[in-house]
Amino acid sequence: MMEFGGEDDFLQRVTNIKAQQKFRLKPTQTILLSFMLMIGLGTLLLMLPVSTTNGMGLPAMDALFVSTSASCVTGLTVVDVKNDLSFFGKCVLLMLIQVGGLGIMTLATMAAHAMGYRFQLKHNIILQESLNQSGRSGLFGLIQRMIIYTLVVEGFFAVLLTLHFYPEFGFEAIGYGIFHAVSAFCNAGFDLFGHYDSLCQRPDDIFLMAGIGLPIILGGIGFTVMYDVLHAGSWRKFSLHTKIVLVSNLILILAGTLLIWGIETSNSHTIGTMPLGQQLAHSVFMSVSCRTAGFNTFDLAQATQITQLVMIILMFIGASPLSTGGGIKSTTFFVIIRSVLAVFRGESELTVFGRAISKELRDQAFAIFTIGTIWVVSTGIILSVIDGEVHDLEEVIFETVSAFGTVGMGIGITLSWNDWGKALLALTMLLGRVGIMTFMLSFIQQKQSIIKHPEENVMIG
Image (cartoon, rainbow, N blue to C red; front, side, top):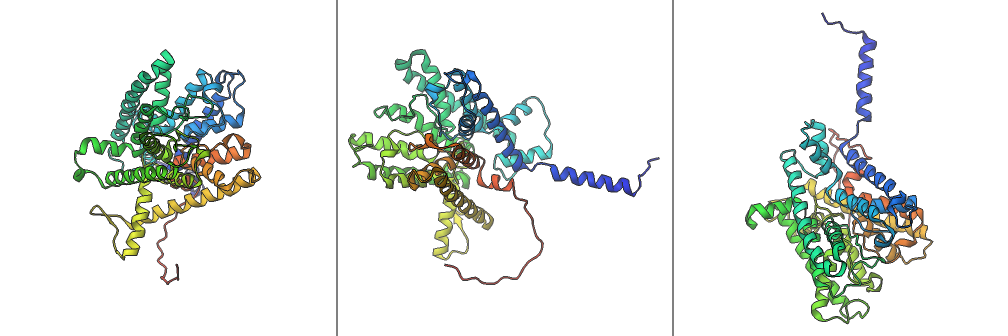
C-alpha cells in the first residue's frame, strides 16, 4: 500500500518543481548559450600559440573578437588571416565559420539523430526555435536537406575555385578553394589574400567574383527556398515565403547594382576608370556582397558617402530567414514596405500574391525593425563616445551596421577600436546572428493577459 507524506513533504515537492521550472533554460536561451559556448571555445583555441605564425597566440580580446566574427559569419577582423594565423588557426577559423553558418544546434541535432538519440518534446521546441519554424513536422528532414545542400554547393564551388587558383598557388589552391567556398556560402566574408584587402587587388578577376557571388546568393536566400525551387517546379506552386524571398532579393540586388553603378561610375578611386562591363560586374558583386557577405572589390573608404549610405541600408536589411546571413531579413523589410503601402491605400487586409499576412506577423516585423534601428543607433553613439569622436559618425555607423548585419565590410577603422569597442561590436555581431527576437526573448519573460482593457484613440502622425 502506497504511503503519502505529510503536508510538509507535499510543499517541499511543489517547491522543488517550481525551482526546476525557474532554472530551466528557455529555447531562446539555449540557442544563445550554444553560440556563446562556441565563441568561447574558438577564443581559447585562437589564444593557443599554435594558432598564430608568431607562436604567441592572439591576445584575449582579439581572439574573442575574431571568434565571434567567425561564429556569427560576419567577417570583421582585427588580424590578417593570411599572415597572422597559422595553418591550425586558419582551420579553427574555417570550423567556426562552417558551424556558425549552419548553426551549432543544427549540427548537434543531426549528429545525435544519426546515433539514434530519441528527442523529447522540449528538444524539438528548441530545435524549432533555432530553425525559425512554426511547426515541428519535418524538422529532421529539413536539417538533413540543409546539410546536403551545404555540402553540395560548397563542394561544387570549392572545385571551381581550386581549379581557378591552381595556376597561381599550385597545390595550395585546394585550401584556397575550400576556404573561400565555405566563407562565401556561409556569407562570412573572410579571405586568404592578406593585408585586409579582400578582393581589391583582383579587380579584373570576373570569374572569381562569380565564383564567390553565386554561393553568397544561394546561402543568403535560405534552405527552405532552395528546397522549394528545386522541388516545387513552378512559380504557382512556390510557397508565399519563397515568392517573397525571391522577389525581395531580386529587387534589392537590382536596386543596389543600379545605385552603386550610377553613383560610382564617375568616381576614379573605385570603378570610374574601368570599362562599362567591368563596372557593372563590380556593382553587381558589391550589391550582392554588402547585403551580408562582406567581400569587397574596391576600397570602401574611397567610395562616396551616398554609396556608403546605400550599403548601410542593404547591410541593415541583410539576408533571408533560415539562411547563413544576418540583418533584419529581406522578408521583414518586404512585409514592412507592403504594410506601409496598405495603410496609404486604405486596405483593411494585407495580401501578398493572393495570400493574407496576419496582424501578428506585421507587428513582429515592425518590432524587429524598430529594435534593430534602436540598437544600431545606440551602439553607434556609444562607439563614438568610446572612440573619442576620432572617426566620423557615418564611419562608425557603417561599422556598427556591418556588425549587426553580420556583413563584415570594413571601412578601415576596425583595427583602431579599443577593447571596449571590440566587445560592443562582438555583442552586436552575436545579436545579428541569433536574431533580434531570439536575443530579446532570452532576457524577457513573455506574459499573456486574459484581461481586456477598453480602447481609446490617441492622435499620431
